[in-house]
Length: 337
Image (cartoon, rainbow, N blue to C red; front, side):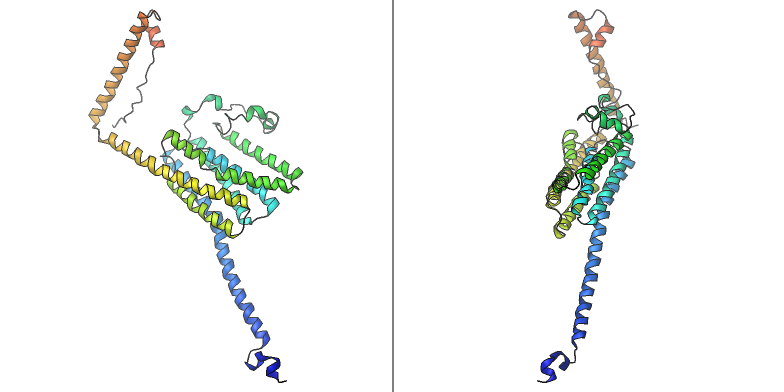
């Protein structure tokens, strides 16, 4: 038997070791390219959701108002991502998603700071405001008073939001220490994380329907939410993330589209209303405002006379107390000086 029959690679001028070396080199080159692509995807997964919040932060700084923006978005994003952080300790999915959740929690703290700073205090009921200053342990011992549904996330003091966030984190840490060894606990964390995060846009969509005003909401932020959530959906499917996360993100993409449509619709309508007001001449606006004030005065006099006839008041001052006074100090039309 000849040498060529024993080792055909030698007859072609190729040794077996050279072939293996070439295969290893090609695999190495392919793996480096794949690693670069995965690294770029990881960077995009972490940075893209965080960059979207700069649009809303810039909107707050420009308008000096948080009216129209639902603070419950921050609540749901905080809950969804704090649950996902503890969910990672049981499932150990990609660390990229863990770093993303940590960044989102930090940005919710910043958004809450700006929401409280630029909120309209005249529209907030005092019954919803917690005026006391208590330590964190007070929340644990008096949870029935502090965690009433009507009071949660409607405070006017910034410290109350931070205390609530700290309370949630402390409770999850205690659960992690005592029941963290059970698999069903982490499965529940994944379900709650996906549920809260998928419901992120629901409060904003409801608020838009109620107020019919989206002027203080950044369309860029919601639109990039849609793009980011679409990418997250692809990312989680590609790297086989837990099923809870995939289902939650799919629902979130749909809600992002709904809120984008609301912003386009209400902004267009509000723009049309503002153009109608601008068309009215300045002298006509002042005349209309004066006429409305005179109409209010006549209504007050008429109601006073009716009260005297009915025997409900003997003098004009008492009649004024019982009559509905309309405040025309703030006219529906701009002053246009």
